[in-house]
Picture 1 (cartoon, rainbow, N blue to C red):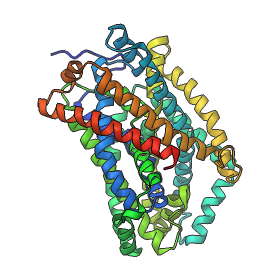
Picture 2: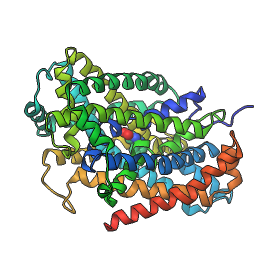
Picture 3: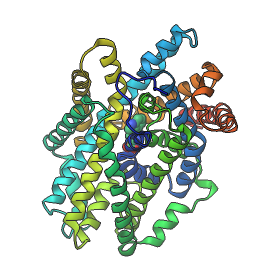
Picture 4: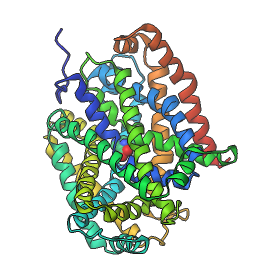
Length: 452
Ligand code: TRP
C-alpha cells in the first residue's frame, strides 16, 4: 500500500522515528537539567512524581502529538489549517501550533548557550584540563567560563551554526545515522561513569537521596517542576514531536514507539543522576547548586579517571551531539512550515530563524556573566526564559494540544490512525488523556502558578 507522502519525506524505516524522537528527547534535559532540578526539589520525592508524570501525562500527550502529525502529514500549522478547511476543527485552533513553535524557538535561545558550555568543556577535556581537579578548582573552572562572555559567545555561535546547517538539511536524512550511534554510545558511557562514580563517591547517600522520599517533601512546587520537566524532557508541548509524527511510517505502532522513547529518556536521566550524585555528596557540593551542578561535578570524576581526558572527550562529544539532535527538533516546526508555505529552501528558513535565536541567546549569555542582575520578578534573563517556557508555555501548549486531540478532533479519525493495535488500547489511551492527563496538567499548572 503506497503511503501518503509528506513534503519533507518519510523516514526510510519505521525504527528511524524512534531514533529521531529519542534523539530529540535525550539531550541536555537529561544530563544537565534533570540532576539539578532533582537537587533543587528534594530528590526522591521529585523522582517519584516525575516517573508518575512520565506515565500519566508525558506518554499520553506524546502519543497525542505524534498521532496528530501522522494523520495529516503536513507541518503542524498547515495540519490544523487543513483540518479546519475540512470542517473538522475550528480555525482558532491554529493558535496552538503557533504557540508551540514559539515555545521551541524560545527554549532554543538558552538551550544553545548551555550547549555552548558543553562544547567549551569538550575543548577542556581534549586539552587535558580536568587532571586532578578538586571541588574548588572545578568550581573555579566553571566560574571562569561564566565570566568570559566572549568565550560563551564563540561556542554559542558555533553551536547555532551547526543547528542551522543540520536543520537546513532534511531531518529525514542523515540524522538517523547519527542518533543510531549516539544513543547506545551515550548509555554505555554513562553506565561506565556511573559505576566509577559510585565506587569513588558516596553511593549510599546518593541512592538514599534519589530513591527515598517522605510525604513532607511533596509540595506543589515539586509537582509543578516534575510536570514541567517531564514535558521538557520528552520534547512535548512545542510541536516537535507533532512535526516528527508527520514523517513517521504507518507501519509503526505509535504507542509502542512512544513507550520506547519514554523508557530510554528515563534511563538516561537516571544514569546521569547516578553519575552526578555520588560525587556531589562525596565532595560536598551543594545539591541545590542549580545549573552549575553537572558542570562542576563531572569534571572531578573525569579528572580522577586513569583515562580521564579520553573518556571526558568522548562524553562531552556525545553530549554535544545529543544537544544538537534535540536543538534541531525545536526549529523543525517553523522550518518545515516556511519551506512548505513560502517555497524557500529549508536552509534559508533555518538561517532566518536560527539568526534570531542566536541574537536573543546573547542576552541569555550575558545573564550568566552577570548572574545577579535581575530583569523581572527577581529573575535574570536565563531564569525568566527557563521558567516562562518550562512552567508556563510547555504545560499550556501541552494542555491545548491534548484538548484538541482528545475532545475537538473527530474520534474516528484518530482511531483510524492509532489502530494498528487493538481497539481496547485505543480506548485506554483516549480515556487516560481525557480524564487523567488533561485534568492533572490543568490542576497542577494552575495550582503551581497561584502558589498553593
Ligand atoms: N527534550 C530535550 C532535552 O531533554 C529538549 C527538547 C528538545 C525540548 N525539543 C524540545 C524541550 C521540545 C521541550 C520541547 O534536552
